[in-house]
Length: 185
Ligand SMILES: CC(C)(COP(=O)(O)OP(=O)(O)OC[C@H]1O[C@@H](n2cnc3c(N)ncnc32)[C@H](O)[C@@H]1OP(=O)(O)O)[C@@H](O)C(=O)NCCC(=O)NCCS
Image (tube, rainbow, N blue to C red; front, top):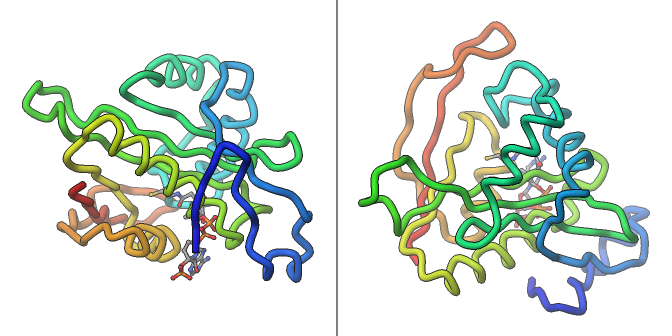
């Protein structure tokens, strides 16, 4: 069973079988000094995946601006393993109009070397707790069509398929769909 606590998230037994360090993942609010590592994780996804439809790696300045839009009602949580950030998860503003104030958009990224070890799931537990504390009503995840690992992750936490926008993105020379998953809390 996945849980999180201030003492860190105990890694399931099978992770050690995969050669995973016998440590605990600590979940905490991001600090500005974490931004370069967050940028490294994000830019790997920019260059190698359709997880984001961003085509060009971001600069540190761009990520610092993104960082400054978080905190308070828009939490940004990192997963730290043996003093190294291995993933992050955020809640961001969903569209601009004030009528959307009870809705946020979620985002989760795990470093390529640490995937399929429940890190994203641990981050989701934490970010959903934050969303409940902040009394949000709906969380929207916008997922690239074909991003099966993200779909599985979100379904695992009760997000429901809420629609597909066909061929709204163009990346790696191919049209890309977006699928929306929504969790009402
Ligand atoms: C999607 C992502 C965050 C998942 O992180 P993770 O730490 O590997 O996920 P977890 O280990 O917690 O696994 C969560 C679920 O996803 C499934 N999953 C993870 N990676 C998978 C893969 N490559 N193929 C199939 N299923 C996968 C797991 O099996 C698990 O499902 P289950 O409970 O039904 O077994 C990670 O692959 C990633 O960072 N990808 C690039 C960025 C991205 O796509 N972000 C999401 C943007 S919407």
